[in-house]
Length: 596
Ligand SMILES: Nc1ncnc2c1ncn2[C@@H]1O[C@H](COP(=O)(O)OP(=O)(O)OP(=O)(O)O)[C@@H](O)[C@H]1O
Image (cartoon, rainbow, N blue to C red; front, side, top):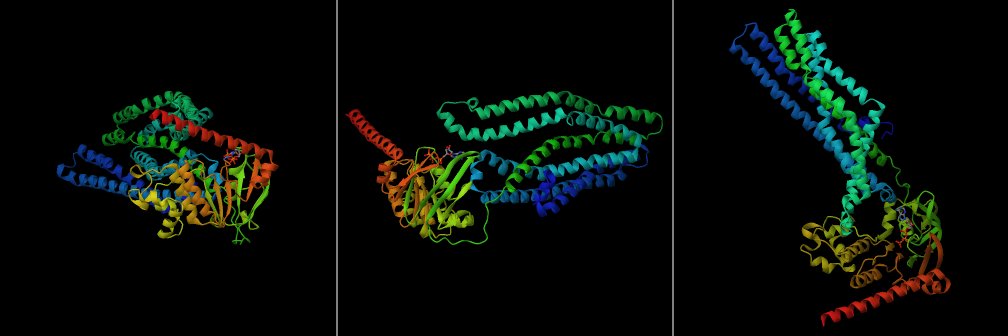
């Protein structure tokens, strides 16, 4: 891959071997342009012969057959050109999407986290789609738009160069207006702002649609969604600017072009009465004299398309040239599955560290809970183990081996992760558990049983083959969490990171999940990221974080005695529990009274 090329040349480079098909499509489009001229040329000859009284109607038939053949052939050329360009376009589209998604798979997860899904959707879906449209449709159209005027003007010059020069007047006017306006600094700036605001607005729409449920709950309207309404206002502003700039010259061009035949007519009449122009040639100029302009209009809209393509290719290259996760040559073998943070430091935003010189170790086969106030860095520390992000300094080791030394696939094989968010895919429950792992159906069912999901799966219309999202099949939050647990059980990784797996569960679900987890974590190295202190009192060790720093390490009893912050958190937790019990009692009493 070359970093020097940009725009269309880079696109052609990305299209690889499909260049041959594009050349065939272009050649056929040029042939089509040539063939479309034949009927006009025949009209000229028929007219010439008729005016000279040299042929009767029986002799006209072969001319007409030739004309008819030319029309059929030009149709075939156009069809073949479109087929070739479409095959090339879909191949390129397929390859580009594959290259981008493949690359995204090899990028650190932090790269995806740092970008809005709207921005990535725009590249993978919209930009690639626009390239398909450009290659399949615009490329052959452009070839036609370039060749047809070229052929027409060439032919007109051969017929009568004086009248051909007059025919060029509209083209000259068109070029002058476009170059003085679009080529000016003001024109370029306004065009750029217009394109930028259009793209911003499109990205804003994606976010707006995603935020709609929350906005509905709070009774908000589109204008309250600042990003979206701002982008619409910006677009409106720049669109007006662009329209103001273009309105007058565009009007001039249109009126000039509508009357473009007048100079040809006037000068043609003059030459005819002067006796230096034959009547058939004059007619030919009246038919074709300004016929080359329409295809040229296509080229003016092309400038907009090419700008958009250039930007799309640039955005794609930003992904394709992004630095991938470092690959190491050999797969290191860790001594065991213990974990250790050595002076780990990390920041999401340059200059603001959220993990600060963190040091602690988790012996193999033990359970460690990460606790701390909200925002202290618990989830971040967990994600660093799975290399969602890379450390700024320091290191994390598994069995004495720096996690960066593992090929990412091997690291992922060693680490199982239960996220706070449940990600379900629009596919069968079976595939949602399997997640592409090489496991048998029996193993999938065993994992589902261990995660306490087998029973509710069997109650679904098609059991394990039920597709999530089809015909209203949706799982509750707790059921989704248990599916996620089944995935991790099936993966059977020696290190487990559980990011508050019971966070959104009701008591019944919490009980089921906790039972499943207690079986899952047997003999594994486990880190529980505990946003609440319930059920971690019996873990082997608790690591207390505060503002990214390590505050204390110890068992529950040790921290109660040795850490003021932990004691404070424990009291707060107990009060919250008492409040929940009290709330339950009050609700119970209220319901009882209401029933009576
Ligand atoms: N993707 C991100 N980009 C920038 N900052 C982030 C990102 N994720 C977290 N942070 C910040 O990093 C700090 C630590 O966040 P983290 O989620 O690790 O805390 P936590 O202890 O797990 O909090 P909680 O218990 O509330 O979930 C916070 O200040 C948070 O705002």
